[in-house]
Length: 233
Ligand SMILES: [Cu+2]
Image 1: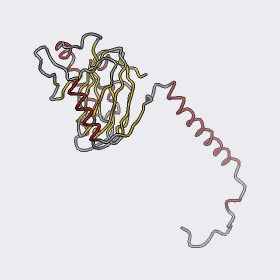
Image 2: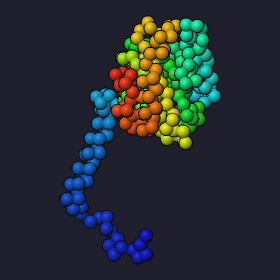
Image 3: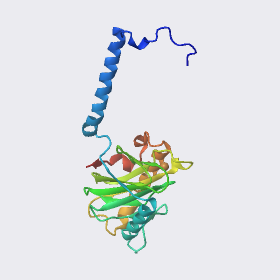
Image 4: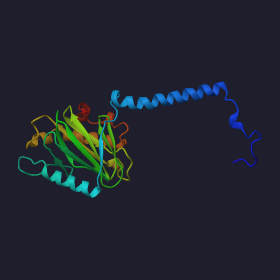
C-alpha cells in the first residue's frame, strides 16, 4: 500500500509497450490452447474416464454396499465365505452393478469381476475425501462422502488390480488399499481355485503402490497387476 498517490494518476492509460503486448497475446493464446486441449485430451489421451455422480447419504450408501456384499458374497467349495485379509470377496453377477466403499483406511469389499463384462462401479466414501486409483491402469477418481460416482468399467485382462488411496486422508493413508480381482469368463462361480491363484502378487502390488501415494504406483505394481489392463467404456 502506497502512502502517497502515484504522480501519474492515469498510469494505466499509458500505451502498452509492444514487447509486453506480444507476451500478453502469447500467454492468452496459450491459455486458450490449453483450455481446449484439456477437452480434446479427454477423448484422445485416454485420461480420466467419464462418470456419473449422484447425491447419497453415507449411511444409505454403506447400507446398500453391505446388503449387496451380503447377497453376492463368494463362497468356497465347502460353503464358507471367501475372505482375503479379513475382507470379504464379492462375486457380482456378470455385467451387474458393483459397489465399492471407501473409508479410513480401506476399500471394502474385494470384488471379483469377469473379463470382458461391463460393470457399473458405484463408488463413495462414508467419512472423508479419498482417492480411488486403480493400479496399474490410468483410472483416478476423487471419492467424496455424500456423492456416489458411477463408472462403467470393462476389464480386458484378468489378474489382480490394486486400489490405492491417492488423496491424503489421515495417519493410515499409506495403508489404504483395496483390490479388484478379474477372472477369466466362467471361472468365477463357486471355484475356490480361482480365488487362491494370484492372490499374493496382487497383495504386493496394492501395498507397494499405496506406499508411494499412488503417484507412480503403476511402476511398482506386482507381477499379476503388471500384466493386467482394464479398459474404460
Ligand atoms: Cu484415503
